[in-house]
Every structure is written in C-alpha cells, then in structure tokens.
Amino acid sequence: MYSISLKNQNLITSFEYVSIDSIFPHEKVIINRKNALKKYILSCDEYSILPSIICCNKSKMIIDGHHRFNTLKELGYKMIPVTFIDYMDNSIRTHNEKGKQLSKNILIERAIKNNLFEPKSTIHEIITINKIWKPLVLLSTLSEINL
Image 1 (spheres, rainbow, N blue to C red):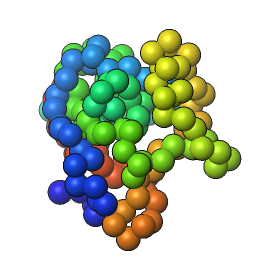
Image 2 (cartoon, one colour; image 1 turned 90 degrees about the vertical axis):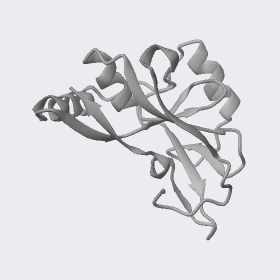
Image 3 (cartoon, rainbow, N blue to C red; image 1 turned 90 degrees about the horizontal axis):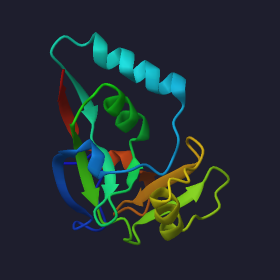
Image 4 (spheres, one colour; image 1 turned 30 degrees about the vertical axis):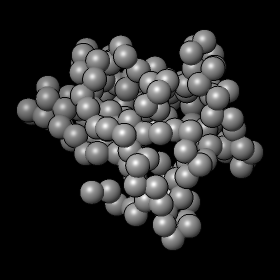
C-alpha cells in the first residue's frame, strides 16, 4: 500500500477526509511554494491528485503537508484527505535542519498555542524494516481533490 516497508504495521491508524478546521499546523509556509501549489490545483480541469496530509491521531497536529493544508484552506476546501498516524511511536523521529532532535511534545504544545516554527525547520522521518530513515511523506495516500 505504501512505498516503504514499515517496521510497525500499526503506525497508520486511519485515512479519512476530515474537516479542514479539525487539524492544525506546527510550521509556517513558504508563500511562493504555497502559491505554486495553488496555481497547479487551479490549472486542473476537474480534479487534482495530491498526497494526503499526515497528522497525529491524538492531537490532530499536522506533521507533514503544511503547504497542502494552507493552499486547500485558502481555496475554500472544507474536507481534506488526512492520514492519521501514531506520532509518538519510536519509529518516527523529529529533528531540525541541523540534526538536533526535537521533542514531539514541544512541537504539539507550540502548535496548540499557535507558536509556529519557521517553514521547513522540522524534519520528520520514519524507519523502515531495513533500518533506513526515510521521509514521513512516504506514508501519504494519493488522494483526489475535486475542484
């Protein structure tokens, strides 16, 4: 189902279309990148295909997909595709661009307070059964976004 083999098969708890207002970010976005995605979505005739947004199944914090989230929100989408995961699982690591480990609980606390990190300043990775760390986005489900 996914492009990587997971060490923990229970890591993904669900995939659903949820209210865009039920999830929240922990990072700001790069405006040019958001605008490029908006242009792509608007260029599609009937629908576009995007990776689902990845969120913590307990806190509902966005882990991966901030640009997709902000773009879809700006375009007025009410329901968006989300893959929920067990974010606290040890097979997921979080660090900054310099490799310093980041506390998942601190990320969630700051997100709840809307004290957002700078764009692309947190990196989330998952370990495969071959013990290789890969980008978390590989857990996303390709999803149809209707215009």
